[in-house]
Length: 133
Length: 204
Image (cartoon, rainbow over all chains, first blue to last red; front, side, top):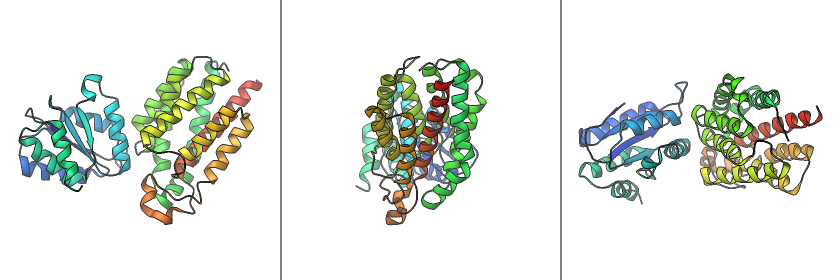
């Protein structure tokens, strides 16, 4: 569900639906190739629609970059679980992971495009959030 | 209030059974105004809590509550996992091993504050906070056990005419009116079970 091969800001996609998360990741790859560490997660622990903290922690690990990680989420529980996951990270990593307030598919593509140019975490987050602002 | 190992185990079983026995009802409430997974999610979490017994009850009360919170965060999913899990974790962090009434009130206050922060919400938005906040107020004011349990149940009922402002039900706008909030109901069930167990321990 992940690959990571650069020092650019990593992108994590969290959707209630694994199909949406994977599809959004495909769209990101089409745009930026392997220039950005990328991981996705979706579904609850029983395989139904939902999100889970363990999956999100794993995705953050999978997309980890020293430049940080931007998380794109779909609905409420995805956001709440992502914020919980960030708080459960080791302290030195916590400040380098942000949850973006942006649509999950569009936000992921825009954030990854910004990241692929070497932008810092704050700029990656801003680009995703400003698109629909 | 001192709870020995057996009493802690009885408390955990009572909490879990209250949720598990009402899983279908919670799912039905959630199907009306949400995504219909609240009962299933909460049952998954409390099944995992039960699976951690009896060794879970070997822990002192604060550590046990923190472990329950972490399990719920990891297993429940949805927004409820972090919200209910945070409540237990913060309660555990704030309680001494043998809490007095004032300790319980102070710790509950911290836990409710943490749930508000986690959900960026407050009472009045048709969520579990519409049960937690009035129960906490009564606890601070010195309400007795029976009054607290009754208030939890009534507070869940009071979410029926409310308009949802937070959570999935808010997407329904005015159609959210006329249904009990499933998170409020599960919070009331947990509080009812906790009060009943603590009352029976105090008598034994």
